[in-house]
Image (tube, rainbow, N blue to C red):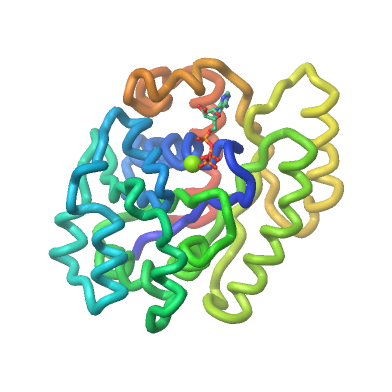
Length: 262
Ligand SMILES: Nc1ncnc2c1ncn2[C@@H]1O[C@H](COP(=O)(O)OP(=O)(O)OP(=O)(O)O)[C@@H](O)[C@H]1O
Ligand SMILES: [Mg+2]
């Protein structure tokens, strides 16, 4: 059985997608079988890996629609998974816009994605779910389908503030929908070593949450190389494995493997 990990943050642009990709490719480099599921209508997982599924009828969009209307089979889910180097991806596109409205009246509306994920769980060691920047029904679906949650927090004050809200949402999903859901941890992204802001946020993170949740010692450095990665259509882990950003993601992946014993 695989470990299903979703990356969430209410705030946009904090590094959820870049982190999903590089942690997933780190798992794969560690010899694990990995699937990334994109649940964001921006479809950035595919785009950052040099692919485009905007016109493709086999994506998470079609699977969600089919699962809302009836059932999806393992065969059907497999038709929507594409190998991109050493990982599989289940891509999204702009047609996922408005999915929360479609989910609203669905039977078992918080468990639609779980039904999809469960069909292929046994095929992977790790399934990484990249979430949109909100805490709507699609994200609730991701939290319900997952074993654990990773929260990337940009080393900025407002991003740090939104952590409280996210922890509350995770708690709520745990109580009502998924009692075994764990918080795998929180890590800082776009960290700038020499700034008082980054250092201050890091100190606050450990001080306020350190006793309650796992705060990773590794922080993801701010780097133009990370921002350039979509230009090359490859994960940074593959492009530049020795780059400090890759090393930090690999360390987080190793810690997750060690903690999960997967
Ligand atoms: N470590 C980093 N250093 C510098 N830029 C980064 C880093 N990580 C991500 N970025 C850049 O920051 C932007 C936001 O990253 P990303 O798309 O991963 O965030 P996101 O949280 O998924 O955004 P959204 O909420 O829109 O889905 C992108 O342009 C990305 O290239
Ligand atoms: Mg994203």
